[in-house]
Length: 108
Length: 398
Image 1 (tube, rainbow over the protein chains, first blue to last red):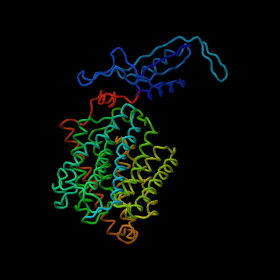
Image 2 (tube, helix red, strand yellow):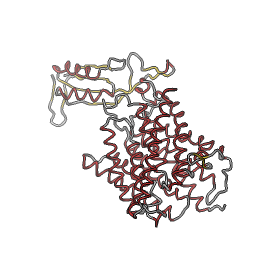
Image 3 (cartoon, rainbow over the protein chains, first blue to last red):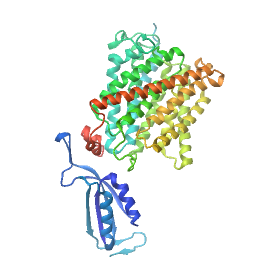
Image 4 (cartoon, rainbow over the protein chains, first blue to last red):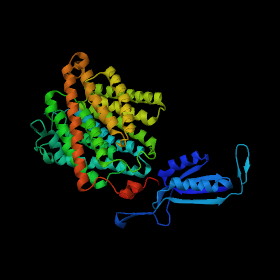
């Protein structure tokens, strides 16, 4: 199993969610966060105002190994604007997951 | 020139009640925008109130209530509040002045609906000063300062034309000039804090008692009538919008509180002229009509962002007509359409049309002028980051 953690622009969330649903990926968790990437946020009015933490959304999606690549691809395509601040996607290994309701265990 | 202590005490309190409506508008709008612009909406309301306060005491009051010039504008006799003192008829002249001031401040705050989440602070201050001087002051003079509308016999008890038609159609013109918010129609821009909007609505409902009952300018039976019909129209408007939204899908609380405001707007010009049962009709039509206006606005893809046009503009227009329909001589001394006075209805319609045309046209010109000179709108990056951080250096996200 893989845990996909994606940091995206909040305004791209609708598109990302729809794109995932379209390909049959329904489960996800979302958190409102603030963060920054390598560019240290945004500078406004010729450098007079700098904002180093911007609102982003953090998505967490657990998938079976074989789907990890396509989920990453779907998220990237839907979250992309081409400008600085589009975000970043991390893929982490997961030992196993357990469904609370019936203790169903997923390992692969 | 005898002061009445009861009247004076009552209008002092009503003035304070109406003042609270301005931050009420800020909270109402603040809850409806995205969190990154929450502080901006509240700040704009306070700034509107402050700008108008200074404008009003220096020359605005004189333009509105100074000696009439050709039915169009007041003379400059009261500039710097010259001759506006502690004496007066019933209530002190100073008190009448400040009671009118809080109306003017509130009206400018309502306009921020049309430019929410994208207006430059400096541009708003300049525009606000121009708008209150060239749109609000003449309209106030026409209706209440001895201008042509008053001479014609047009009825506007507490400001349906002066406050609501002007700010509603003004907001529409502003929205057309400044343009849509970045991303409007492409992704959802949902209200970020609905309880805050409900709190703002509560303050508006509460303050509106001062707005309408206070417009009797005395602590008397007419004030009581205005108080009662105001509450009835608000309650009916809330239920009517809720019901209409329920039939179409969901009985959302935002619709319910918007309906209450629509009812309050519509009863405003009528509060001193109609009775309780007429208030039910006025509030019910307002709730449904303004809901329809909101649907029309969203279907057309217009970004008059927080619906001042649908609620204040359309509601105010209906209120002006409704005053001409339901007015009863037993209450305010004038009969309306249902008592056979067709003439009054026609006067109301004419007054509403002229106010609508003037407010829309003049606002459009002023907005264009400010846009061409200093620019109305923030930069793309500032809009993206949100006005709280970009303009005020503050954040509502802790």
